[in-house]
Image (cartoon, rainbow, N blue to C red; front, side, top):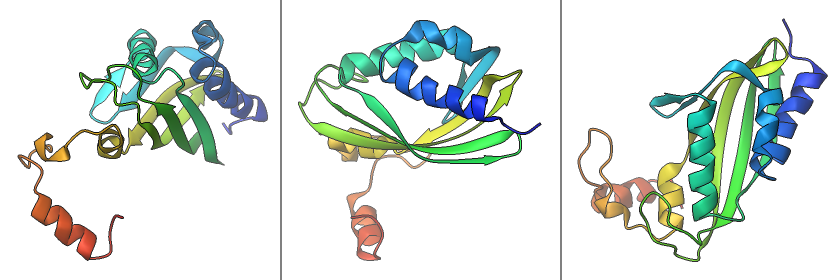
Amino acid sequence: MAITEKEIALYHSWVEDVVNKDRLELADTILHPDYVMHFSNASFDWPTQREMFRKVKLGFPDWKEEILDMIVDGDKYSIRLMGSGTHLGEYLGFPPSGNKMKWFMVSYGRFEDGRLREQWTTSDSLNLLSQIGVDLKHIPLAGHGKFDPESEAAWRGNGYGK
């Protein structure tokens, strides 16, 4: 079944009202009772994601998300978002830096029974950590040990990255 204009508007409400305006009570009208968020290598129900929102807002009290692109194909959607905020509180154990940051995300999902049922989201988490002043040399990369600045320099020297 194809996604309707009403469901597209519902996703916009998710971002504008729930995420940006902290109107978490609206989630019950937007999310399917069996809603699941898949983020990186973990899956969360709404109560767990609500706690994640709380932690993001503690670290970035002015956190906002903006929909940059949305593509709908049949019963699925793909969306590109930009999050922004100022690191004024502890986040993931890192003390406030006062740095303003932007964080890009891509989400793919589906609706069921007129409500958001499932999302798969990925983001540039290392970029976020770098922007709040974390020394990436000390961040273990999955299965690759510590960050290798020489590999990073070679990567950037090949025209990738900044």
